[in-house]
Image 1 (spheres, helix red, strand yellow):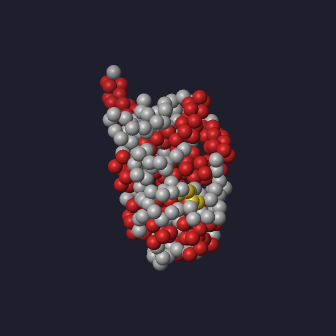
Image 2 (cartoon, rainbow, N blue to C red):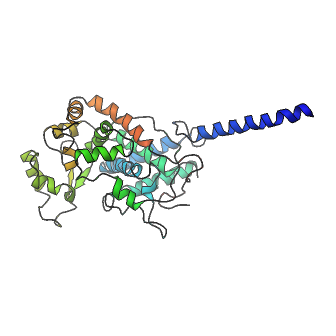
Image 3 (cartoon, rainbow, N blue to C red):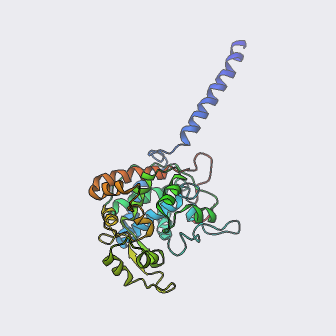
Length: 323
């Protein structure tokens, strides 16, 4: 009795430590998080992404953008997917997203397919992360091992989206500061900006550049003016490719364009403007392989931003609303 009485507290302590260790371990992101609970999640998402991109090449860029805009607001928590409620105004109608963020229906479709194979297991935040990788690959870009185990936020932040996502008017110093506020370096910023290797932008976001700025190649400006009138309110939503040559393919042309003063957005051209990031832009412009490998690493780093794990957040049944 005495011996048993003296060892029981130690056993309880040891068991508590084990629980603590297991709890800490399970709260970390891992590439194998769903290996037992939903082993088919990656193949399910990949198939759905390939189908969506095959139907519309531009959708790949839109899905990558959703992941960026999600992670820059309180971390990669799926908050961008939430519709407005009586309790909060979500991020969909924030300035960087309103009438421009797209792909929500694709994410809803992917979520429904994942729910069929493993209901209540995979978060919308993780679906965004996997989708960003698979979209990049579908457009000819690099692959990487996506870490998963995120949980979904129960709220969203309109002010966070308005204040944290860098607008196309930002200077180089503002871009660097914006990314540093997220724990990302100036080098990460230049690398992740390379996502503009695909996708399109609205006239309202590049009008001032093509009509007012001098560090722009003349014929390029003329080409863009053809579909973007100088008068505000006229043709605001007209689209132009961020990469003139290969707008639906992942390559390093984006950086070559910057060197040639053919960046579409003011913020794009700021990366090559006689500043501290010029050398990195030149390096990527001359080495597609270097850019691709750095981009994969930077996307993993982006996905690590403040995830909800463990008992925080929830696993939403539908990505647009909390349970």
